[in-house]
Length: 210
Image (cartoon, rainbow, N blue to C red):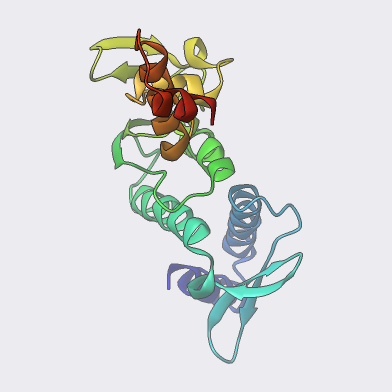
């Protein structure tokens, strides 16, 4: 609805001869298109407005989609961005303050998890983001962030975690015993237990060789 309102403001300004306002809104839409293209990882993305239905849609490389039919991951990221964006737009002057986000990685593809916080901090440079996450992709996505491990009760800079495999971070900071799948982990633990039996039975030796 906000996009439709802005488009209407632009049309009214142009009709009324207010070229300055009309051009400001045009630039606003161009910036919005660029932000959406980066957020959704579609450099050629275009915004399309249907004057009959008063609805916006997105023109992507592989076709046209409405905002309502975006995949869950894109829709979740777009919803988060738009909520911050609309609140910032409602504030006169530069918006500043804190934004609290709980588990932004929900429904997001791993690559989008890597991009989300860098994108938000670039778009809203005067906002401080406080984020709770269980994703190594989110935790390591900003080099200049302060990452606080609630279990170890120790802060680190984001760049201290960069350069490590995500599996290692899951083990060292998120409590996973191993970065293998659960079934393989169980087999490895069983093999470890069998190797530490001094006098194995024939059945145990056979199980160990499997």
